[in-house]
Amino acid sequence: MAKESRFSDNVHIKNRKARYEYEFIDTYEAGIVLKGTEIKSIREGKVNLMDGYCYFNEKELYLKGIHISPYDQSSFYNHESTRERKLLLHKRELAKIKTKLDEKGLTLIPSRLYINKRGFAKVEIALAKGKKLHDKRDSIKEKDAKRELDRIKF
Image 1 (tube, rainbow, N blue to C red):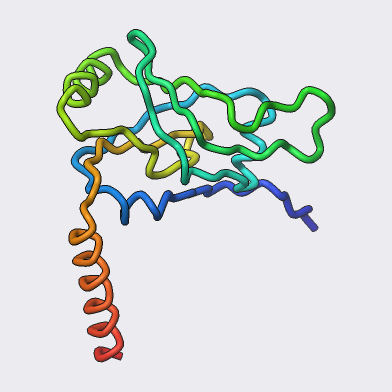
Image 2 (cartoon, rainbow, N blue to C red; image 1 turned 30 degrees about the horizontal axis):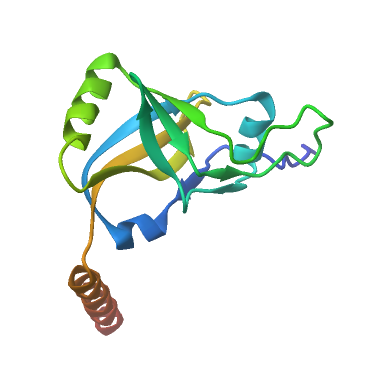
């Protein structure tokens, strides 16, 4: 009988708070530079994207504020949980994002972290604009109305 692995093949970690706080304008898929024990923690699903954001340092894009928990079975070679991580995108995409970020009121936030079919960790980053209070109320009303309609159907 095969031994159950504690690592999951289909990891999809979402930043649900981001959909509530921001209006997504555009999304991009980026690779992420990780240390050895970070990918093991991601496969276990021990990631928090809530406070994450992206910023440019010269011509490179970095991800800051996400928390990847230290790997339990590791020795002293463990990673720092909240370190800055470099994102991997094409130069054309980076230039396009940089010009859009120069507009007033736009930010770049991680919306989802997953492992693709080839086994690489990918981050879906979203170019977003902050919602006003009335926009948040509207999204809550829409969600409640949809829930009521689903309840009536069944």
